[in-house]
Amino acid sequence: MKQQWLSRSGTQEVLLVFGGWALGPGPFEDLSGDSDVLFVDDYSRLDDPLSDLAQYDRVTLIAFSFGVASSAHWLTQTGLQPDRLIAVSGTLSPADVDHGIAPDMIRATADQLSTASFAKFCRRAGLAGPVPEIDIDAARAELHAVIERGTAPDHKFDRVWIPQRDRIIPTRAQQAAWAGQPDAVREISAPHVPFAAGQSWKEWIA
Image (cartoon, rainbow, N blue to C red; front, side, top):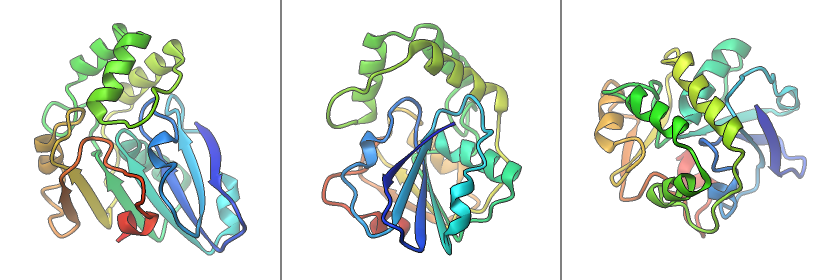
């Protein structure tokens, strides 16, 4: 895991953001708010206890895409219990034909990964702005790790956001995955990366 602070001013509340595969913090950089924001990604290994979180009175976890399952695995390992759990564009079964992306498709993405194919992925995801730099070998290893790790233990998410135009993790797969928590689900007219300039973190935590 890699971590970086997107905002750190010494507040009593921290937003812990588990990002998606290879996109970096770009999707979140235009969101505004008063809380400290710690961004993590790179799920080849889930071995960072993120000890800085202990200084905060309140922890809200926002997980995006493959970060949803990765965060649930990480929570099980660390025993951390956030005050609120938010899932966006992801499921607890990332490598799954019915509830995520077919494992064969993820393997094909890894095997054929190039700067050109990654740029195409970013466009399909609806990422605004420039394509992030990518370490091909590391990104490929991360995809294989996600497959091998499998479905995450069930953690009750307080809010689940499902984009209606998701071309990465199919909308229907997300709907099926979260069918058991209908009260938590909110569907939004957006692509896989649903965040937009002018939005606040509070809108996603609601």
